[in-house]
Image (cartoon, rainbow, N blue to C red; front, side, top):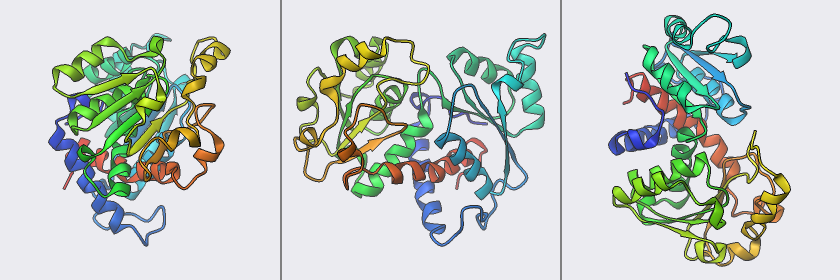
Length: 309
């Protein structure tokens, strides 16, 4: 049994196998309708339980479609429909019940401790659908998209992140170690990534550069990533934070300082961090990026269920 909780804890060979399988499965479905099941039906009869404590559109939809295409089914539970340590039932008991009825469990949570507790008390695979610290399914899918568009191994590309240092960036930093790519980060000084993850990246002999100037961060970039500056449930002074990120907005002028064939990716939903003309331009590949989550998450499911080809 394998979990998919944090990219830094998954062997790089396994991550590469997932991407390889995703490519094959996407190619094999070019003429299939959305809910047509894959011919091999590798997860026939399996039930995937999803639980979201925070809003979810792409993760929820893509995993729903992913398990259906693999021959299985899914049940989505709202967090307010479960006890989750309240109402006389412990988190451990909830975990054991979910293990009894389901074959796999996806959780989107506001606390890392909940993932740990479920992991310690469940007998089925757990997938992190987003937590305060990481968003591994998003970033692995993004790497798939980058290599699909650029037709190169990501290790040969220059990757840049412009914006807030959040859970998506944490996973991108972990991916920079696993896939050995160069990563530049552009953000205000008081929003730098946590020291512990910077130290982990350096300890694992990968280089990241952090710039307080977005113009320097995007030089020679093949790919520019960004995310919403004001995240969901972000308890900050919004006006103040937006003001601090004003010069980090991704504009056409900023894109011109990157390589001519540079592409723009955004995990969505978007906010004030990207200009409308950039977001809707030919350089923006956000819709392809979103759709690819289905293909990669199918292979993540197969990895967790021990069915990866």
